Length: 88
Length: 88
DNA sequence: TATATATTTAGACAAATATCTAAATACTTT
DNA sequence: AAAGTATTTAGATATTTGTCTAAATATATA
Image (cartoon, rainbow over all chains, first blue to last red; front, side, top):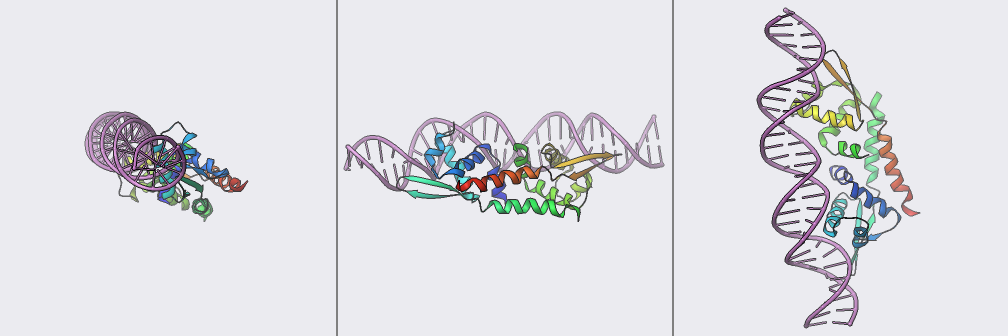
C-alpha cells in the first residue's frame, strides 16, 4: 500500500495512468505528452512500476507500458473498510 | 484530489483515520497512540482536515476529531473510472 | 561497423515534507 | 488572578522528492 499511495501522490503520474487507460504507449510517446524531460518521465514510470500500477514490455528498442488496474482493488478495499466499520 | 492523495500518502495519517473509524478522539488522545510529538500530530490533523478527511469540533479545552468518509467517494470514483474505461 | 534512436542510470539541486523544541493561545480550575 | 492542561503556531533541520543535464546502455539501420 505504501508504494501505491506514493505513486498516486503526483499529478504527472496520475495523468500517465489516465493516458494508459485507452492504449499502451511507449516511454517516448508518454514523454511527448508532458513538458517534462524523458529521464523524469522514466523515473515516474519506474515508480508506477514499483507500485504495480503499470507493467512494461520491451519490443525492440521500444518499451511499451500498460496500465494494471488490479492493484487498485486493494485501494478500494482499504477505503471500503474505512467506510464500513465507521459505525460499529 | 490533490490534497486527498497527499493526505493519504503517510502511514501515520492513514493510521489516524483508522483510529477514528471506531470513535471520535481528541487531539491529545490521538497523539498518545503514536511515538510522535503532539505538534507533529497536530500538523498531521491539519493536513487531514485540509483534505476534508476529518472534521474537528472544539469542546471546552479539547478538540474532538471525527472521520469524514464522504470525500473518499471521490477517490473510489477516480479508481473506477480508470478501471472501467480501460478497454473502450 | 559506425551512426542514429529509445530508454535508463547517475549525479546534482531546489522544493516539499516530517519531525522536533520552544513559545503562544485558549480554556479550566484553584 | 495565577497556575495547570490542551492544542496550535513558529522556526529549525534532516530527509525525501521531482526535476534537470550528461552519460551509459540497448537496439536498429545505413
